[in-house]
Structures are given as structure tokens and as C-alpha cells.
Length: 114
Length: 113
Image (cartoon, rainbow over all chains, first blue to last red):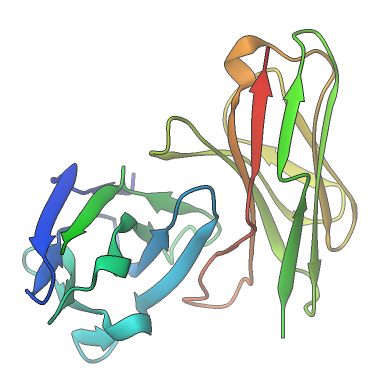
């Protein structure tokens, strides 16, 4: 069965510093991996995805993520954090063998301090 | 471009009352449709998904049901709400093709009193 872990419940970073939000996954085959961001009382917004190819994928709002197959990780990164990046971040996996369903991690709350 | 509409945005209902939340998608055909519940601003629980009209899969046995009367319409219902049904309900859609992401509506905040 597929699963996603986000080992940090909360991440605090100072504005202007680089940020990393961690994600590890478990699937039976090669995964499709996604990152989403959620602001208060809103739906999740798609940030970026990894399907195949280059291990470093770039997404919206300056975010990027690095796929590491040997470590089964897909960490979200940004070189310089903004206060407006403060939100709840979700990693998700979709198993191409089963197709239909997405499995989400528990979420990581990012706080960027001015 | 595709858009997803979900309403109402907030809802306060007494215990034992019925529920109907509606979600529609525009700009695409034959989407996969999903209902999620998010409790306490955290993890997402998949409630139902649908790959076509009249085709509903339930992930969690509960007090809720879902229907898909039209290709791009997905409805979440309950005959009698429980206190435990309170939460943030999110509708989402995706395509079946490889690697296509989920796209979410803005959610409905349901409070059962």
C-alpha cells in the first residue's frame, strides 16, 4: 500500500532564509509525487509534481522539489522564504499502478518569521 | 480553462438534519471526482471518488453518501447529521492521464451543533 510521511509537524524559518519541507513515500512502483499548499479556510493549491525525468522539478511561487529515489524522498525547497509562504503544505503520491487515488501526507505547517 | 465550484462556503446545521453539498467542474469532460474531509486543519481523509456518472466508490463507512447525477456534478449528502460530521469538506477533480494532479475547490466548513 502506498503511504506518505511528513516527519515535521511544524517548520519555522526566518524570512530570506532557505526553507525545506520534508516528505518521504512508499509505493510499489515508480511514483507520481505532488506538493500542495493550503492557506486558511481554502482548498489545496497545486505547487509542483514529479512524474519522470529530471530529479529537480520547479513549480509555482519559486518552489522546487528534489526527487531522490534511493531515499524515497521528495523534499520541497525554496531558496529564500517569504512571510507569505506561511501555510500548510501537503505532499501526495499517486501510484501509477492503481491509478485513481492520491494519498496525502499529514501536512507540515510552515511559519516564516519576519 | 478548468474551474471547480463548491458551495456553500460555510454551513451550520443541527444534529439530525440533512446535508447536501454540491460541487461542479467546468471546462473538462469525464473528470474523476473526489470528496475529502479535513479535520482540525490537518490531514485529508478520502471519503468518496467517482470515475463516471453513477459510479461511486466509498473509502470510509460513515454517515455520508455521494452521488454523481451528471458528468461534472458531485454531491455529498447525509440524511441525519452527527456531531462528528463537522469538518472542512473539499471537492476535487483530476483527469485519468498519467501524472495529472488533483485540483481542489475552496471547501465547505460544516459545523454540526
